[in-house]
Structures are given as C-alpha cells and as structure tokens.
Amino acid sequence: MKRLYIVLAVIAFILLGVYSVRIDKFNFGGNTRYSDEEMKKMIFPNEFSKVTLYNVFRSKVKKDYNIPFIQGIDIYVTGLHSADIIVYEKSVVGCVKYMSSYMYFDKDGIVVESSNTLLEGIPVIDGLDFGRIVLYEKLPISNENVFKEMLDITQVLVGYGINVDRITISSDNNITLYIGNIEVYLGDSSELNGKVGELKDIWEKIKDLSGTLYLDNYNPIKDNTTYTFKKR
Image (cartoon, rainbow, N blue to C red; front, side, top):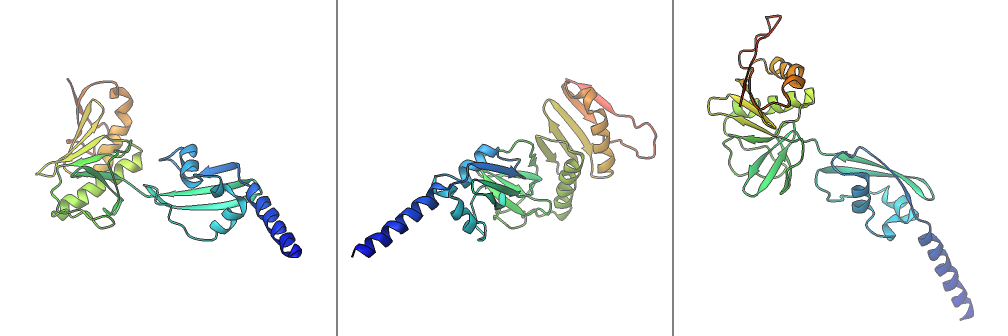
C-alpha cells in the first residue's frame, strides 16, 4: 500500500509539474480581422489551454476553433513557454444583406460566413436579385452576367486596395461605388480596371469632398482621361 501511495505521489508531482509549464509568450501571424489579444483569448481561453504539453499534442491534431472568418490555425510550440500561432483567414471580397444577417462571399461568389456584424473594409452589394442563400454555397443570383459583374468589381477593388462602403448594381447593370461622402459612377462593367485605376489616381484630390465622381466615359485610348466631379 505504501508503494501505491508513492507511485500516486510521483504521478501527482509529474502532473503538477506538467501543468505548471505553460506558454506565456505568443507570437501571432496572419491575423488582420482580430487583434493579437483577441486571438489569444479565443485560442487560449483558460489556464489549461496554455499548458505547453497540451499544445504540443494540440498542434498535431487539426482542430476547428469555430472563430468567425477564420479558416484555420496552426500552433507551433517553440519553447517551454513560447509558441508561434499562424492564423489563416477566410478570403472575403464582399457581402449581401440577407434577412437580418450579412452574408460574406469570396472571390468565387461562395458564401463563406454569416454574421450580424458588418466588417470594416468589406463592401455591401445592393441591387442583386437572389433566392435563398445557403452557407458554403454559391450566391444564388439569377442573372449570370450580374453575378460575373459583381465578382469582377469586387476583385478589381481588392487589387487596387480601395475600400468601399457599398456597391450598387442597377437593373441595367450600371455600377456605383459609395465611399464616405462620395459616389463614384462607373457606368457599365467595361474597362473596370482603367476606371478604378483612375479613381485610385485622383482619390487624394477628392477624398475630403462630398459629391459624385463620373467615370462612365473613361477612355483608355486618350492620354488624359477627363472626368466630372459634381459637388453636393
């Protein structure tokens, strides 16, 4: 019996030692939607989740953390008290309002997330005619041309690093961007790259104004493209 007590005491001592060795230095990478502190609270919500040995095992097993807009997370234990955490975010280029939620879609038009919160820097697309939206499926837009137009403009904006509050696509397929107090009328989807490039070039001149910028007459052949800005 005495031997059993000794064995149990040794096991308890080992467990106590294991539990006392925890990660307290966290190096995050890849996260833009959440701060390092927010990610730390979600991945390491309690003291046990910081135990080094637990994280060694956790790093070997694919785990779904169920964090909105996060595709996956890799944990690399780099020392007894340190770990690198690599965050893989879902690719999001726009969203549509559906009932009481924002449905976020990727560059292929696949709905990747549903949230009651509107993310900063992600445009809301208005003017689309769609049916029932299902998570992880393609947006059910009846008009394929409008669907392609929507994906084209969102990707061009991402390419130029332009954040837009809202995009409307009218029934005759004309596009208008809304950025703060400025409306940018692009007209149809022809020469989207050139039109958005022009917007990028002149943005510093107009960003503090209020009014409508007309780029629908953009002509790539002309050396000096003319545009009209009407103040409000």
